[in-house]
Image (cartoon, rainbow, N blue to C red; front, side):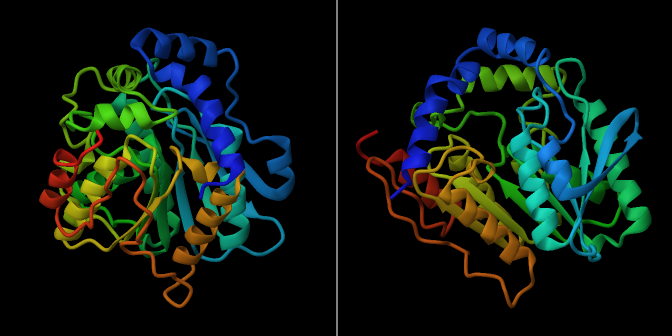
Length: 336
């Protein structure tokens, strides 16, 4: 059963953040307001926990985070923050980054990539691609992990596909937290999923994508990486919440990637919302433990693949035997 705190968070989100995604007009209003409040710099409490340095790449800040109490090992993590391509990194992201640096004894590179609507797809990926190339100059690809949440999870997958296309060495692993992988939002069941979601919704999401890439079809693999060559992806851990509207396509992505030969560990957490591992609550601590274990080596890796979760009322999670059975399970279910 979800914790009391997670239920409080869900209720709070439905009455606050859900409004930002309820319409194009609301999304634009929230973007305008955010520009007066956002600050990409690490909070003071985080800066006290870890060593942080800053440089610029392609005119944008890049932070390097290292553990303060132990010497960093050879692992490097490229962390791509979420925010629907239009919102800045937040203290929630920074706290997760600091914890991962400490517990994994890893160096974490955090690009503050240019965001929409002031910038577009090419600006964002030009900057993060240059950041990755700079990492490769100093670190073998087999020591690099791409980690991202929400839109950042999307960017991690797209960046890997782009690197493959350029013949660059590819990262060793992905950790994707509530990723957006099919931005067409055309799944016939997305409307019901959006009604259940206390945070995300369709119209505001489409407006954010329009700001991000108005010149690209949403079915282009650079926007919806589920449409791309999944066979190039490394072993991947995906954390998805039951009440996140993106989860229905995340399940489909996982099955398609497995069919393409990719090792995918998919966790669907009952009762959880979008990017819950970033929020301070009991379920987030479990999710963070899972990430650390998964990146800690085969001996520490828990058995996560095809984790069986309780089936919530009115919703049947697929067995993940194949994508067609998944689609059929949603099309034919009762109580929709």
